[in-house]
Amino acid sequence: MKIHVVLLFTLVLLVFQGCANSFGTKGVEQHVAESVIEVLQKSQRVLWIGAHPDDENSSGGLIARAKDLSGTLFMATLTRGENSDIVWNGLCRGSQIGQARAVLFAQSAAIFRADGYDIGPFVNGPRSLQELDRQCPPGAPFQPWPPTARSDDVIKKWEKDWGKGDPVAYVVALLRRRRPNTVIAMDDYCGVSGHPEHIAVARLLLRAIPLAASPGAYPETGKPWRVEHVIFSAHVIQPVVASNYSKCEGSPPREPIEEVPTLETSRTHGMTYFRVACLVAKTYQNTMLQQGATESQIQAECARAERDAIDAYQRGVRSYPIVEPYRIRSFN
Image 1 (cartoon, rainbow, N blue to C red):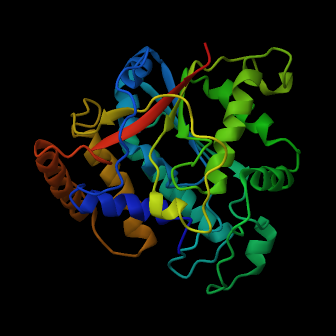
Image 2 (image 1 turned 135 degrees about the vertical axis):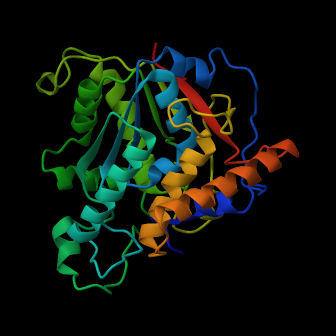
């Protein structure tokens, strides 16, 4: 199974199948002390953080909503997605694909109208950038993390990638520089798809948040900053997690799930949050699968998908991505 971009293409598939699928996650409770929307309304700055360019598709509707509600939106990916299982245009895994996916991430940030974006120094996959570059020319076999890999293995490998021995310090510096009140991320349980790098990012984030607020921790990375909330995606792509490659870690989170609809119209984008998320997903898909669609064709496809989603919603469908499930973790 193609793993590194399976999240992207699974989400795109959901969008273009009328959204009446069985992957939706039902909320275990409908009432929380503070709702996702209330948290975003109180946040002056929001940061979305992931492991790879295209991971933002896991929370596309909420990222677009965050720009509306907070006014200031930042995005960050810790790798460039250098070990993509899909390669295109004769590019090789490693530096070439990493640069191409970085361009796609910049396009995504522009569609979301982010106020800035960051790409980290870490390398996607179990090999170093030098090892990936040595596999050029194109056609070298894809070598993913082994089925036994866990987020701890990823973090240890990223310590070697950066050369400074502490990826937590990178995340602390990012939080202090961007100063988000709220962070949106995939969770430390399943990471949406069970990918160990998704889970690793969540674990690094949770380690970094209290340290970013501490004056005595990493003083070289800037002034302390306190993150108040993390909004974790609670969506789980069950067929991917059920594979031998992808695994959840630890115990299920205790926080209740809140379902956030995506069919309201964004005042920033002039279209529904659903359609903004569709445009981002289809832009990735169009490039990575070399589909050759024009921008107007992508716009038309997403308009049709939006109409199908509205029709499904009116018929009572409340599955992903018509609604997106989230959990709030507070650090007050």
